[in-house]
Image 1: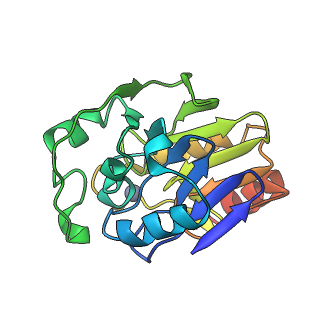
Image 2 (image 1 turned 180 degrees about the horizontal axis):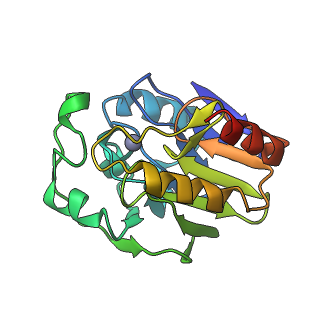
Length: 207
Ligand SMILES: [Zn+2]
């Protein structure tokens, strides 16, 4: 499914695929890769050339967010430095590839992200908790936050997964709650397109 959220394009290919966001020539997360034919069909319809994507930024290295990286043929792959080795070694345990019935082929990470880096106009905020190298990406132009599996429209991310850490999650959520956020673009499910600051408070209260 294709959704246009202002300047941002959201692809939702299946239940198992992460949300795939396209902002100009930058992609945030790439899904499992299992549904690349469907993805290419949609990209053709909206006249978006996958070869013109310059960067794929992964919010973390779980298989359902990174499996499609290779389908953006000319893109540099960026992930937090703590999880670059997962991709580079094809670590099927830490990527949870088995859980998604996937095979993770080792590939080079081009950009190792650190907290405070800016990539494709997005500021990197290291938010460990769901996984050690989870990041949120803040876009100051529209005050949007790409939250991966750290935060969803209806709750916070799971820490009962490979690499999860509840204490780190609490600290990360506290940090996010201090940001000036208008929109939340999560790794799964619906986006929050206005009043995210208020939504954020409600979500935190619920936990
Ligand atoms: Zn995840």
